Length: 231
Ligand SMILES: Cc1ncc(COP(=O)(O)O)c(C=O)c1O
Image 1 (cartoon, rainbow, N blue to C red):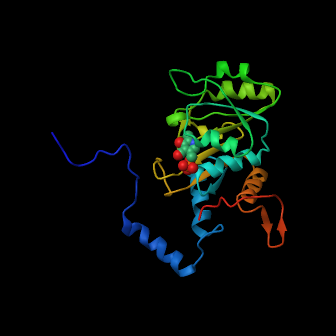
Image 2: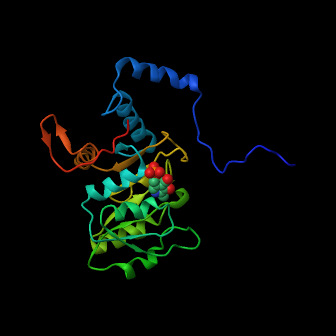
Image 3: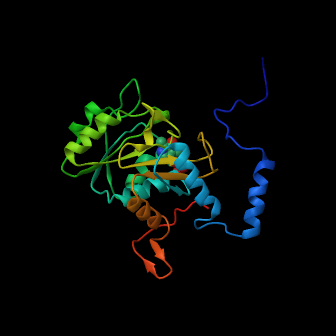
């Protein structure tokens, strides 16, 4: 059949507009548009519950979340990563002046092949940035064993892994940090958006400073931050 209707590879999931408008009306009334407003706090809280993770920090997009995750853990030198990803994974390294060292993927899972990681580790390596490609979990146990052996941090690019569980546990609970994307093409979208999942309150505070110009309070800037806040 010859149809003129385009077939989209993907289309954003959107709620009925009439369900969305009352939320906008409240925002129009209180005029709190950004900087940790009521709905921002509510979304962080509800995502923690839905994703079964302890701490979520919302971001304006997943790329800035990746860049801040690397800053939060003070990653430098070389980082082991996968070439099979969206460009933002590697670009976030370049924007932090970090040299990416590519390790080939497993031909079955398309995720970084843990058997090949050790051969790529040099004295300059400080972290591994694997990607749960298409939402298929990486071999998180093997990756963690290697990271522990060589004292490397692990930041998962979990842009595709919203709501993914492994043995009943959220895949976002592995590694030091996980980064999500809420871009329009993703399973869960905020038009543009992203998040970092972390495991302790101190790290959540550091991430929240970093994404808001390093501002701690009205008179204190604690770290050279950036503006990566979700509105
Ligand atoms: C694997 C991967 N990492 C990072 C990103 C960057 O996310 P964003 O588009 O929200 O900046 C994307 C997405 O689009 C992605 O697919």
